[in-house]
Image (cartoon, rainbow, N blue to C red):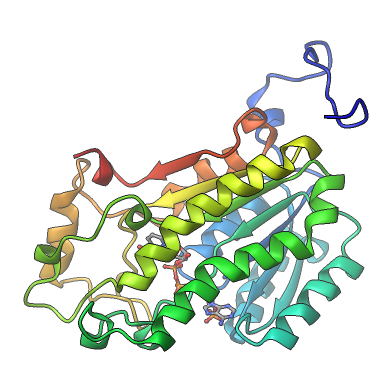
Length: 292
Ligand SMILES: NC(=O)c1ccc[n+]([C@@H]2O[C@H](COP(=O)([O-])OP(=O)(O)OC[C@H]3O[C@@H](n4cnc5c(N)ncnc54)[C@H](OP(=O)(O)O)[C@@H]3O)[C@@H](O)[C@H]2O)c1
């Protein structure tokens, strides 16, 4: 490591230990993918609450409606949006170029978007080990890995300049396999390409942490457990009275599903100086699913 990148070991006189400073994102800019989604919109709002400027990416027009609410609540200058289908290469690169030219700094990158629908094998027999096809697998490898890797690549210079933080959203199914018993008698299912992509996301996280540590960039994974979208309007949401939900609740040690806001503290921790010496870590927020 060169003298230029080496940081002093002692900063005691300059670092505030007050939680409102440690966890603050004031003056920082966070790029969030999938910001219109069930978890992504709470993640974006948590970052805004910690006083970050948020650059929000998503595919559909619902992003703009949500962003308008944030502008009213947090200020018009706090939110920028990029409506973009990340699986369309030209559009993806255009979004990255536009972010780089419009944002004077980028401190935080939250790679949260993923395609969780019938086309990627969710809630469909076609997503089973017996029937999966290449198109489903490529959606997971594209969305679960390439989107995150390419964004880190595209925003890398800015992240290095800011000694920034990358937060990759993985899944408990990157750590443990789904149990077939959970799904028996339902049309629910978690396709194999998804769990493989989420395990690889943990690996990508350690790689970024290892190679960019010398620039002061930290990379960590946020690992949600069962945060089922109940009664929502997406293809993978589940009706509130579905007995499948009880199976999920019983499988956790806390006896309940995760609520999007359960991720807020962990996300702010990883994004902010509160985790200044934490890198390459996987922070599991799963109600105890993976401990038993
Ligand atoms: N919910 C859970 O129980 C759970 C558990 C563990 C891990 N996770 C992880 O948490 C993350 C968010 O999950 P979620 O439940 O919030 O999913 P979600 O509600 O389906 O949201 C997915 C987000 O990704 C965006 N997206 C999907 N395909 C895209 C594309 N081709 N181009 C650009 N954006 C695209 C969507 O944009 P549009 O809204 O515009 O379509 C949406 O904002 C995912 O990485 C997921 O694997 C979720």
